[in-house]
Every structure is written in C-alpha cells, then in structure tokens.
Length: 424
Image 1: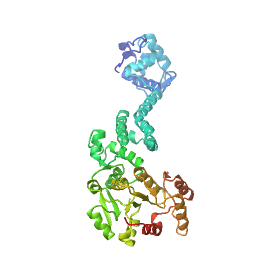
Image 2: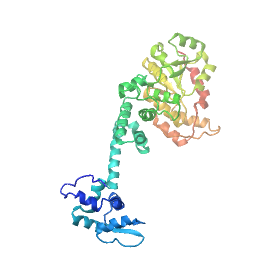
Image 3: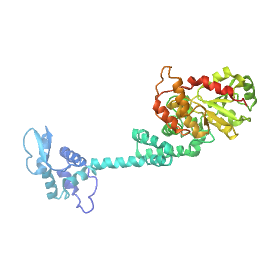
C-alpha cells in the first residue's frame, strides 16, 4: 500500500517504513478500508470492526499489529482504539489511526462536506440563470424550471462546463427577440462566436430554444418545422422562405394588387417582405388567429373585404415584420383570436411585438360570446393561465367562466364587422 502524502501542519510526520510494515500490508487492507469508510461517513474511529472468514495470513497480520491474538471464533474482530494506540505508541503514526489511513490511502473528505462542496459547485454553475432572471422577469419561471429539473446539469455534466453553457444561453437570450429578424447562424456567430453554436442537437441550442419558447410563448412541439418556427418566433431565421404570413386584400406590390382585385388570399414570405414590402397602407388592418376566418372572408366578401392578416397560430417572423411595417406606416391594427389560454397567449406575444387594438376581444366580448354559445356543446378550458395586458379583466373573466370560445364560433359576427368596414 503506497503512502500518499505528508502530515498536516503541526502534526508529526508518520514513519513511512514502520507504518507500511505495521498497517500497510495486503493482509490488513480490509482494516484500513473499514476505517476509511468510517472517516468518510463522519464516524469516530472507536469500537470494533470484523472480518468474516479471515485467512490465516490475515489473522497473523492482525496478531503482529496488536502483539496479541485478536480473539478466536469464525470471524476476525479488531478494536480500532487498540490499533490507534499501537500506531501512536510505536511512532509509526503519531497522529493515530486517522492520520495513518490518510497516509496510506489519500486525503479523506467526509461525505457531508463532500456533498456541501458539490452543491456549492452546482449553485455556482447555475448562477448565470439567477442573473438573467433578475434582468428579464419574463424568464424567471423558466430559469427556475431549468435549475429544478436538472436539464442544464444533464447537458453540461460538470459544474465548469455547465456554467460555460449557461453563460452562452443567457447571452443569447439577452439579445432576443432579434429586431429586425436575422439568420440563426449569423446571430450565433455574432453573439456566441460560432455560426454553428445553435445547430440542432447542440446543448447550447437545446437550452436556448427552451428559453426562446418561454420568452415568446411558443407552444410545445417537435420536429424540424416546429423548431424552425420556434426560432422564428424570436426573430431567428433558418431561411427567408420558410417564414410566411397569410393575407387578404393587402395592396402595394403588383402581386398583392392583382390578388386583392380578385379578392383571393395571398401568402407573403419573409424574403418578399424584406426585399419589397407593401408600399400602400390602409387606415385599418384586421388580424385574425385562424385561417378559417380569412377563408370565409374571401368566400363571402371577396374584393369587398378590408385588409385582413391571419397569424395561423403563433405570429411568425413574417407576420411580425408585415404588421410592424403596416403600423409604422400609420395603419391601426385590430386583433381577434380564440378565447382560451392558448389564444390569449398568442395575443400577448403579438402585443409585445406590435401595438394593436382589440377586435371584439375584451372581457365584455368574451362574456357575450360565452352566452351566445351556451346552447352549443361546452368546450372546457385547458392549459396554463396567462395575463392579458391589453385588458387584465379579460384573463380574469376567462378564468372565472372556464369556457373556451373558439374564433370560428364567432365567425358570423366577425364577418359582419368586416362587411361594414371600408376596403381601403
């Protein structure tokens, strides 16, 4: 058994050759290991330890150590106090058995102290999350979840790697949402120092995308298309063609003018919006959440429908780019969506990005819609409650009634509103 280190300051050094002869033999390895386990557990080196079915050599080694037979029976029992006394008296280990164990096997860290040190190391590793939560309150719950569920710890594996990982994640989230939208690789290169830092499967991408969804309210999902739209919700684009927005009767480009004259829906890509945005803006633009509303408006009103934009769920980068341009050119935006937690969350995401006014989307409108639809089969409310900053009373009313009213159930009323509005 190899002697591993010198004595503590102020403690007389062990006599290595003598200690090796007395306690460092292979036949007494079991005794040293039992003593070490007690030290690790924080227990005193007192009382006895036993070895079942010892070999003759192990019995002889114990007898040489103690200078007397350790006792008969089927097992071998040795009193630790007696070993400690022998080591001190012989000068092999003036510090006693504890010092001898460390000299033979290396420093001993008590389990309680080891756990405390480990917890402190992981606390240090997660510190960037705490700083981010203080700076960006909307991410406070997300930061607490990442810490609690151990996601960063599993991805980083060590405190040092995890802290580096979280520092990068927090740097990215501080720079989001990107406005104007930028390509994902360009953003990664500028903020994180590598164009591939946010590639699919990278730990940094996994955690950052999780934070993006908390920041924008993007719903759960999976697959490449879902990830693309999730990144786009924060203005990070895989490409300029995959992000689109559905419109009806917008004008300002030859293609839009032609489709508006026919009263037909038109899909705009982010590429079109960034290269040649519409040059003509109406005084008012109406926004719906679901494509059923826009399709019905095209079927019923055709060219007579005022400009209408459909989010088709979470607002895409293309939708945000279009609506922001319309707002900056003087258009008043009017929004309607589903009366449920998901719909309110989508409206809240859009409200943070672009100013809009409620289009039959207040607490009074919700109560009236719930009453009108009372005879229909009930649609229970599910999901996590959210705030409605444009009118806090709306969230309170939805929680009170607990009834979901989909936008399609209000279709007739919405179409009547559009029919009364001027086209341009």
